[in-house]
Image (cartoon, rainbow, N blue to C red; front, side, top):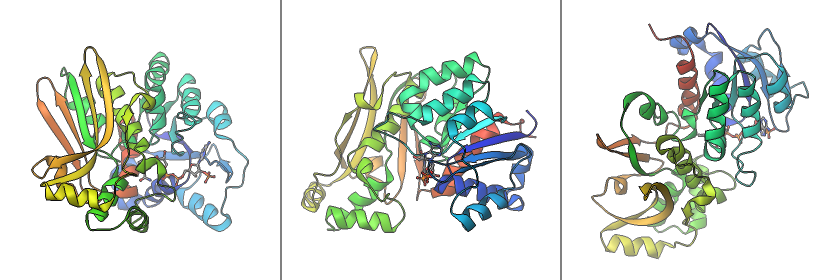
Length: 339
Ligand SMILES: NC(=O)c1ccc[n+]([C@@H]2O[C@H](COP(=O)([O-])OP(=O)(O)OC[C@H]3O[C@@H](n4cnc5c(N)ncnc54)[C@H](OP(=O)(O)O)[C@@H]3O)[C@@H](O)[C@H]2O)c1
């Protein structure tokens, strides 16, 4: 493919950072090889904007900054179905109650028309991965989602490119940054509300941290990983899930007294031909590799048949640039081979 015309579905934190990166090509010369052109951007409630000749990234940023919205009334599904573009980039919010919709519908529409789809939204991977993969294959295009778990850290790409012929027997990790920060603060004596406020002040927890605290975010991430790396065929509802909302500082102090730390652990294992998945707070010995995580660190350990356990550690979460990089890594995957 020479040049890629992008339809951006979503212009929140990640969408804006992605467009900021595109607006400053001098800061990242290797992006030029992709020859990216944004031909449309849509939002939920703040309008949309399309131009088949391309919207200059600086113009997109300036328009939204000046007016707080885009000038056209452009729905994402209609855009995905009707506009001319090469890649749908899905950057809308995770919708747990809607079981990954409407993002799944956006991706299905793009893939069915022979357009690639790239998602930072983990909903489509957790609730519809087999179906979307099948639609992509049938139409000769790709459905990629590196940013959906652990930002741009190469989780899906590692499995896809670096472990050919191995079987993933299991996965475990600490995948939710908010709960890791909150538990760290509670170890220092803060109550849950104070610890959450600290995580929000750091820009890590969302205004409504419910999906983090009750383990839903981690369960969706674990499902996405188990489906792609283990062919698990799960949905997040099948994950045995317990959050951290019931814990108090005294619980963490007592664990410390036993030489342990509490972490919200995600685990998927293959048992009797099926994959079982669990998210729950666990007390870990201080020598356990997950017990050493601090702040917004996250870790995934992949248990393989031939290579034993391989860990990917993302330290001090790189934040929005890391997530935007995950999207760009997928676009590099679709783009011309590197020199
Ligand atoms: N933030 C991170 O560090 C991070 C890391 C990894 C993955 N992710 C994932 O990346 C996605 C984007 O995250 P974010 O932090 O940028 O979210 P965000 O700040 O909440 O922004 C979401 C954007 O999506 C738009 N939107 C809502 N419904 C839409 C629809 N039907 N079609 C098109 N756009 C729609 C929103 O528009 P309105 O404002 O008009 O509603 C907003 O522009 C999420 O799925 C998130 O889970 C984020």
